[in-house]
Image (cartoon, helix red, strand yellow):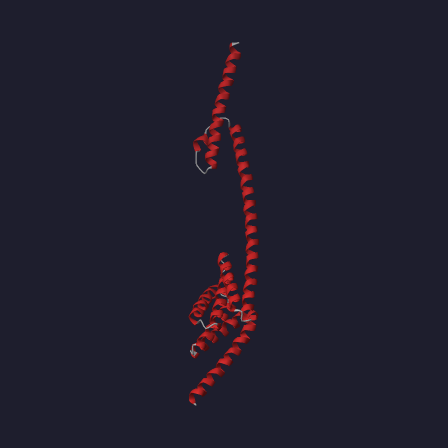
Length: 235
């Protein structure tokens, strides 16, 4: 009986130590997972099998959680891209509608569409759309004789397009600044702007081919207008 009792006492002591050490390893695993260092627990002896199992279970759970979070983030990113693509498409449609209204002489509708276009472009931080809307508003202001507003808007559009390297946008802003200068009677400045616009359209290639033809025709008209003014002055 004494031998059996002694053995049982030894077993109970070992189990007690194992439980204590297991708790220590579990606590150490939690600290480690939180990014802390606790080498004292890791270097100690004891119920290594129990501790390792607990650690593996914890790490496995965290791995699954990270994977689920990564999948959720990827889906959120895809959704955000889809929404942005839809807004960009809407932006282009509104801009085109604004151009159509302006060319038809419906300036109030054109202005409303350009402003809506600008607000949407700013909302999604699309610089190209911001430049296009400002340029449209600038051209509209020029058509209505609001020269100071037109100049400010066109120069803002030009600055953005130059940063983006959008040659067609650069050419359009420069061309209309040239028309503005001509309206103010500043013919030298007008031709300088038109020359820069033509260079930008040439650099833009096929995308700017239609605008390139238009700017060359506009220069011819301005030259004719200038010659007529000179003849009137001389006579």
